[in-house]
Length: 350
Image (tube, rainbow, N blue to C red):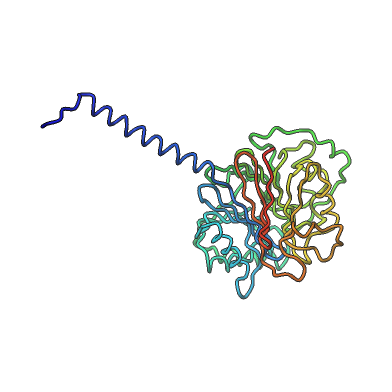
């Protein structure tokens, strides 16, 4: 017996396949949209190494920590990469050419493949150490892709906007999508002198992932912070602030920090580097701050100017190397996990 199909059968079958394909694509899109942005503040003992992994798996490492004989910081970065499920770094951004930020590059390249390096151009500091570290950086990346970023440039992360707002001693005049607002704190902010080191040359960026905002400005000092928020705040408020300059008092001016009004701040200090009481107090008193997390107990500060132990990754006398891990969602909600204790705190969308 031979079955007879109606003439419309091919069209019906095509329509059915199209619906199945559309449904599969839609579910895939929803699944990708639900994936978080992950940020690791890696413990490099008072330097910087901040790893970002986008929902699509693209990666950005900001700075590389110190040089050590055993490549300690490179291996800690690699451990964070393994936790994130990535094997290579798509972008490495060097904020400035100081040892604790750039000198880990040769060690990193012994362990990890890097797609491109991004920096502000040339060393501007008149010191033998800065000249040495810059020369070592150029030698290490010779023959590799290098991009000198300018103000307003996008780093180029799919699904995430990360725009350069400071670099090579200059600050951006306007950030697309941010409406500048007058900052009344500027009237009482002292005038700060510009130092001649690489710190005020730091390259930094504002990252936006849906409603979530994250700011990392390297070691930018007060004289270069202020133009970003005075007379008007050009950056807006942020959810997460990586504390400038490891929490040194030469950075983190009140008019700057309080204008940002971060919900959470992470201080990448060392046991005896950064974490000054003055900076800690300025950040802690910022309006709307829910928590100040620290990579280390600041052993040169008193108990009143250290965060509670659950908010510190590496305690005095404890095992160093624990990270702070942020898991952020496009609705603005996020969580911070303490790598030492495994404790996680949730922060809802605002």
